[in-house]
Amino acid sequence: MDKSAQAITGTQAVNRANALLVHILEAERSPILTELAIAHGLAKSTTSRLLGALERSGLVQRDREGAFQPGSVLTKFARTRGGEADLAARFRPVLQRISNSTGETANLAIAGHGAVDLIDQVDGHYLLGAKNWVGTNVPLHCSALGKVLLAFGAATMPKGRLARRTSATITSKIQLEDELTRVKSKGFASIYDELEEGLVAIAVPVREIDGTVIGAISLSGPSTRITRERIDKLGALLIAEIEAEKPIRKKEGAA
Amino acid sequence: MDKSAQAITGTQAVNRANALLVHILEAERSPILTELAIAHGLAKSTTSRLLGALERSGLVQRDREGAFQPGSVLTKFARTRGGEADLAARFRPVLQRISNSTGETANLAIAGHGAVDLIDQVDGHYLLGAKNWVGTNVPLHCSALGKVLLAFGAATMPKGRLARRTSATITSKIQLEDELTRVKSKGFASIYDELEEGLVAIAVPVREIDGTVIGAISLSGPSTRITRERIDKLGALLIAEIEAEKPIRKKEGAA
DNA sequence: CCGGAAGTTCCATGATATGGAACCCCTGTT
DNA sequence: AACAGGGGTTCCATATCATGGAACTTCCGG
Image 1 (cartoon, each protein chain N blue to C red):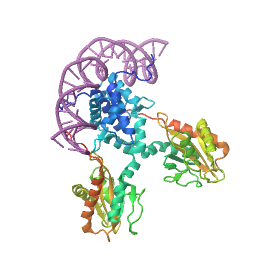
Image 2 (cartoon, rainbow over the protein chains, first blue to last red):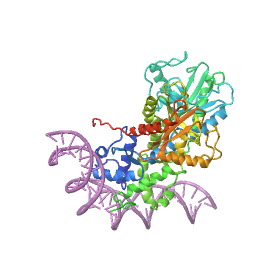
Image 3 (cartoon, helix red, strand yellow):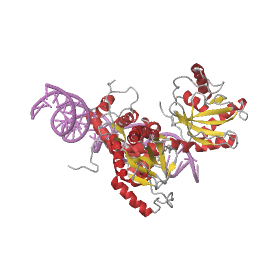
C-alpha cells in the first residue's frame, strides 16, 4: 500500500509493531492474531513475528485463549505512574500556589462515572469554605469542574434530567450546551449559586501534552468573597498557574 | 535447537524499539536520546529513527528539553484501564460470589504506601461485621491482606517496629518472616484476633497473567462464625473463586 | 566568534524483515 | 476415527528495508 503522505522511511517494521501495540491498548476486547493481521493488512507470519517481539519485551501478553492484551510492563506502569495518584502529585504544587495566592480552596478532579471525581484538595486559609470534597462526587452540570470536563470533551453529557440544586442551577440541556460553548471560548468555567447558595467556583482544564483535557482544577469560596467582578481575573489567574506548571511542550514539527 | 536467550531473528528493529520504550517507561528521569543510544549500544541515527517512530505512534513524547517520556496513548491507557478502578471492576464479581456463598464481607486491596490500600468491598448479609473499610489503611503485618501482599512480594517489609494491635499481633519480624513463608506455601493468609479481638480474616493473592501478584482479596468476619477449623476450607474456597475468574472471550460480528 | 555537544538527515551497503507455503496444533463434525 | 477447517508458528529465498558513518544544523556556554 502506498501512502500519499511523505511515508517516512526506515521504520516499517517498527511502525507496524507500534500500530499493533496501540491497537491492543485501545481495543475493548482483546484481539487475536488473525484479527490484527487482517486489520493491519499484514501477513500472518509477519504479524506473528511482530507480536512475538512485543511479547518478549513484556509490552503485550496473551490470555489463556491466546488473545493479546497489554503486558505486565504496561499494567505496572499504569498502576504505579499513570494513574490518579500521579496526577495528584503532579498538580499538588499548582493547587498549593492557587490556594496561597487567593486564600481559597483549590481542587483537582477528573471525569468519573457520570459525575466529577474529586481527587485532591488544598484548603485555603479562611475558615469559611474548608469542607473537604475529596472522595465525594459532584454533578457535572452544576459544578465548575464538571462544566470544564463537559466543555472540553473529558466527560460526556449526563443522561436523564439535570437535577436542580438551587434556583440558579441550569436544568435545561439546551442552556447547558450554550454555557459549555461559552466555557470553551473563555477557557474557564464558573458557577455562582448553581450548586449551593452562596458557593462560587471557577475551574480550568488540565491538559495532556497533546492538548487532550484529562481533568480540571478549581478554586471555590463563598460569594461574599468571590464577587462576580473578580471571576474573570481569577479565571485568568488559574489559567496562568496551570500554564506555568506545564514543563512539557510538544515539539512543533511538520504536520 | 535451543535458542533461549536471543537468536530469535527477524525482529531486530522492533526489539530495539521495544527496549527503548520499556527503558523510557521504567526510567525515573526522562532519558534523552544520547543517553538511550549509549545505554543500548545503538548509533545516534538509529536511535533517532526508532524514537521518531515511537513518537509518531504516540507511544512516547518529548518534554520541552527533548527528553523522552511515555506518550499520550500510554498515559490515557493508564488512566482509563490500568488503574485501580479497572481492577475493582474486574474483581467485583469475585467479591460478590465470595460474599454470597459465605455471607461474610469480601475486600479487594493493593499495596499502598507502607500499608494495605483497600479499594473495594462487598458486604455480607450478616449485620455483625459490616464496617466499610474502603479508603482506610490497614497495617501490613497484622492483616490477612497485608500478609499476602508481603509474602508474594507485592509489598515490602515495613520499616520500624510492628505495632501491637492485640495480644495476638505478630510483633517480631523474625516471626513474621516465618509466617510469610507459611503463607507462601499454603497459598493464603489468615489472621485470628491479630488486628482486632474477635476479627478473623483470610486472604489470597490476585495475580497478573504472568503470575505477578498485584493485589489481594479477603474474607472477614467474627471469630464466632469463622472458627479455626473453617479457615483452611475458606482459604481453598477463595483460591477457587479467583481461579474461576479467568478471561472470557466472546466473538462479535466482524465489521 | 568559536568549540562542542545534541539531534537530524542523507546515502551506499548488505544485513534483515518479508510473505507464501508447509506444518502443527486444536476443536467440532460426519 | 478420520476429516475439515481455522488459528498460529516456522522455514526460507528474496529484495526491501534498516543500518551507521558522515555531513549538516541548532543551540548553548565561554
